[in-house]
Length: 293
Image 1 (cartoon, rainbow, N blue to C red):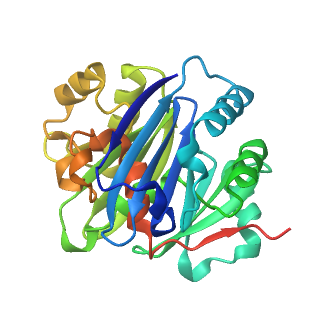
Image 2: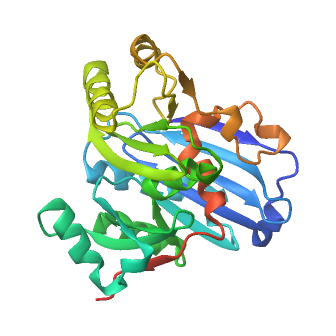
């Protein structure tokens, strides 16, 4: 495992009760931030990068090793949230949402019974519920270690960020979150969320094909509608090079979207870890529930 580690000098292990912990895990790594509730500044960022993690069992094994050696994770935080990555997700307008129907929503959207544990988050604005599932084994491991933890998926933080200034702009934009196994894509315009979807991709050709497909479906002109990139692979030059050939206004979602970082974290590549960093944006807008059994 390789690590990226930034900490602000204000971080104090003895003040854990005044901090919030946000954690994310996927096949590429285990990453977490600590936010000071008083200043609302992120004062610590740490990433354990995984190599050759392919199966869920590989992931949970690596997470177990981190839990054993990283004592910072075991502090008594005021709030703990876990961000999982899942394509098994669907959006339900708030007016039509019924919590007891969560599993049925996913079954209808995926044309089959969803696996794993089912959760829902309220994203407000724009007033929609994100219903998603995460693997049983992963959820059990996280809840066993943290005891009291809230679950979100990348869809929640991605769309919360995309829609935060949506009503103040009539111009169209396309947002792409480049995750290691799939990417999220959202389109906004006329103060509304027009589209959200995910696509699996393996290379630059796949990425370009699906984004062009979305532009065509939305009747967007590639040379005029901005393409805003974030996510763990947003700094990969081969991706950026090909996208800039086809989309004149391709930009990385970094400085304009930067959450509140303490001075000791200013060197962090914000666009790569935007989903996790923006968990704190969901402080008052996420209602987290697990399906009733």
